[in-house]
Image (tube, rainbow, N blue to C red; front, side):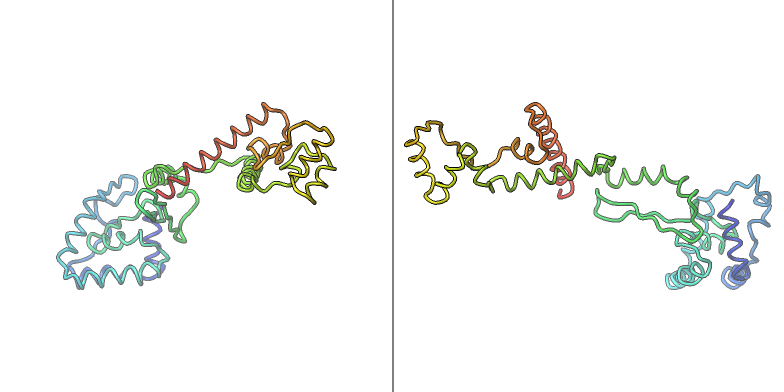
Length: 269
């Protein structure tokens, strides 16, 4: 009822009510009768309009027209009447059916939805008209959500909470740490050398360090690390020292990586 009212009011505001009478006489050679003057549509409370029948009858009538004539009429609607009334393309059928039957088949909502993108990963594009209200969007939202699921069935929405950004930051730092795991400082590469050993190392190299340690009867084996383990990266990043806590955090990062890899595969597939 609301959209019927909007349509009629727009026609009155823009002095278009006579348009259909003139068209009916010149094109269809008959008197134009508005649906509000037709016996079966007079009482709004009892009005039952068979949208399919009305639309079918209209299209049947227009199918008799030469293609050029029908295209010109569509151009009139799309390029003149709709913009003049501030209505979107979803209102086109209202003009078509009114011209033939006097009955406007108005859209359920004053906005248009269409699919956009590659098949299987499409999004729903909503075009709002000046008449669109938030109540219409709310009412249509279940159907819009259904379209979203059908158009991109494997899409996973991002869940966000207070800890999400912190977890993402830590995960990014962890990934950076893994890429740079071989960029070790001297202290990290040789964790059990003394300050004196490092002085020797800087001047003479590791062989001399071994000789001097042997001369000093330092028999502990020199530990040489070429890269950081995942646990080392997490320990440096988050300051976690407890082994069990390190293991749990490493598993958490691993699961996050798996989720990201799965999503990347979906996007590139």
